[in-house]
Image (cartoon, rainbow, N blue to C red; front, side):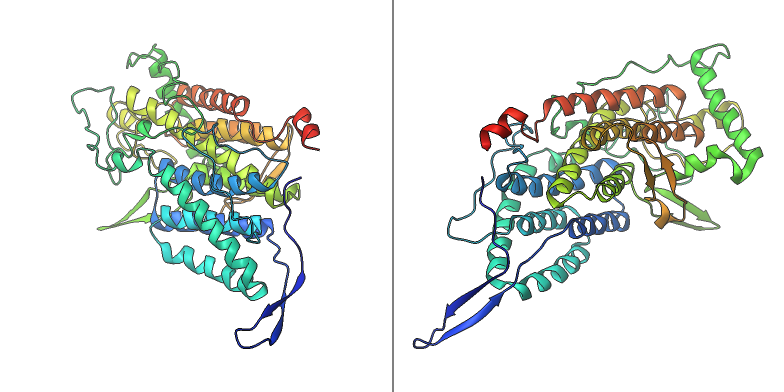
Length: 455
């Protein structure tokens, strides 16, 4: 059995002057899942404020979770290290033998430190961190400081590995060039006409998939504006659904689904000469919110909560790498552009079109992958009430399984007028295939035979 840290105890410290001894009570420091949920909620809040793109947001979630998980795995018999499983990840340093360590505290310290490195508004993260530090240090200075130091040591180790994932290099690569001569290619869309974001995301080092193109989907239907072609039928389907929604108004089930799963951090609002952004969570952040819901419903302890966040965030991160690889390969034009050019020049989608190519649907791929990870962790037929969007003025939606939620998230993109059917259906399959591969590849809990050997 690995070392388990002590609970409340009383120690005697020798004063610096003479033989006088001072009795100092060292209280137990208990780290609960609520502190971890709070840290991740704070990161999400900051990412909304700083307006990170969906792919970048997935990276911000993944690395801190892995750092926390590796510390938990080092101390626990219930979890296995990701070193040697995740690309290029090596074993974290072990703590000094003579130092008392609260591993849950160290894990949260590492998580917050890496989160702080990955966002812009560092002071917001520091404020949350310092509020916890004050409580912990007041209870047990010796245990707090040694655990904090160890957490920071692990954060440095993960940070060094993180720095080699090609993210910094992609910041200096050329911007995406729009091909205005090809009617099949993506064009920037109103109202902001933003340039394509993260065109080089496929060059980011994956966590568990072999390469960005490993789950390359089938191509989209051949482009054709002939009315009998499959492509035109899908375009017209998007338009017809939007007209149906328009007639039904806000009572439409389709519009409620579309709005619930919008998750577009780039929504721009134009009023007269003014343009401003309404800030929302990303698709990955919505699924991270579902991890919290499932963890709380099952009363998962701190270690299992870290495990759930880590496994799901790695699936989400690799799903974005896979999806963005296809987006900038097929570089397909969005429905909004074609409908305005060929069917109705005044038409607007229910949701604002995000600034990147159409195929495949990012939310569909990510939802497929995340739902597989969550099913692997919490089981089939896991019913839950999704209140993730309540903070953004939307009501709770209920689901009988993670798979059902993923299917709804995928079809929401067509209801919203921003994707064709193929991007949705192929996208969710792409995500599920990727998710199944990851769940079969990564080993984070010991097999029954391993567990018996440890006993």
